Image (tube, rainbow over the protein chains, first blue to last red):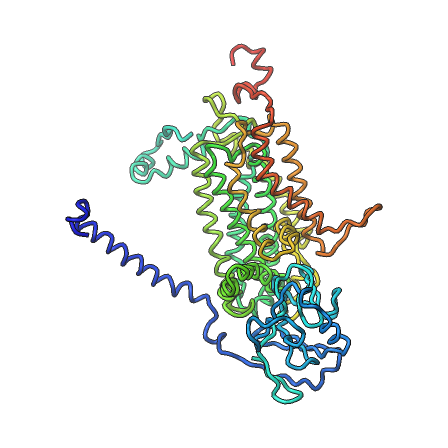
Length: 184
Length: 427
């Protein structure tokens, strides 16, 4: 910005650009609180966890609990459902990833990678298409059918047909003892 | 057609005001003496009808906001309170809810009229694009408004529409979910979502009113198009806006209001969904989710595509396409009256839009049982979606090049006066 290299550039040009740049940064900095206020607030973010007693759940039954204002399915699978899920070839799955928060992100979607104990299937009960709640024991794959746009999941909650792109998510959870789990 | 002003102040006060704030001159020039083509038909009255609709929605909305509570625990009961206890609350709410439907009915007629008579063609491209922006704002406002009663359809409609953004996860993982959480103010649709939707629902109608101002400004520079699609050549082609079109607009507005009143007083829930009289329940999705009727064609397109991101792109693309129409139509002739092929393609588009609306209201796995074969509606929707896009991106440009148009009349005046001008030498 010296007159020797750019004869047209003046002290006034420099002041214009410098003032404009400072002004733009100031506007951006002032805009951020107005945008960020819409993000989940501290009270919403305060991590919650839910403990669930599994004793009343019979084989073939499913219960729904709330975790972080989302429904979580806890399904006690029958031997036939487990066998059906294990028999599926990985190449038949539209989404090859396990989507299991308790495993690495690139874990394959085998049935074993979809649960901690084969009998207990724990899923975030939100269709990965547009967020509806799938209905259990419906659809051609024995698992779930989303009533909104017809996505079908198998007995391991893996997407098999329809517009949903991903398997039903598995939330972080662990067994506190044989009959109690903690989600979150 | 903004020519020199013809306003002459009649009183001392008017002269005094005119040199300080020429507002009376502005009203006189834009709404009284404004030269308007003398051949405008009934379809041209919908612009005025739409201004009426916006006024009704703002007025009824402001009074409803005096009784409504934007809180997830209280919203549903506060609407119930409006319906049962607030004086005339039932009428105000039914006016507002059905007013939205009448608003969209009028805007669709207005848009199809512009499409038929080529009103988007030069020099009215900016006028048309402002209209597309108004339409987008209307859809956003209607969506926010539909969420407010916090019934089952409110809740799940909000869930499905905001989840459209999660499709961006397929481009950059996490971005779509981040946007969704930002929109919700949580990990799912909830109280913060309802609160902000109320704020935006109150704001957007005033933004619409502002863009309507620009829309009318852009209209008053070239002046109205007309059913012949030919330019105004002189004063013999026009009449003053008042009283000719103020009276014509008022007459058709009164017919429109009769239909509106029949809906409000005799079939107030005709266009509504009974599921929305059930309070929102985040644990149960209703078996059959549908948007309001005016969004159904786009909903059908979304469902017709089996891939999530592609479906969302088709949905937004269908609306965005409208903004490109001025440059997609390559024809020299504006009005479809003189375009025999375009006229047919246009009416097929109208039927296609109605068919898509019907398909959007059906369940995703539904099937038509025809005598010879079962037709899955999914495939009907795919073909209808294809025609929608083909109309704008293929048929419109190609017809402009290959179509043999009919001869245009010499002027609006000659066409309107027709034979009488031939027999009467002094026109």
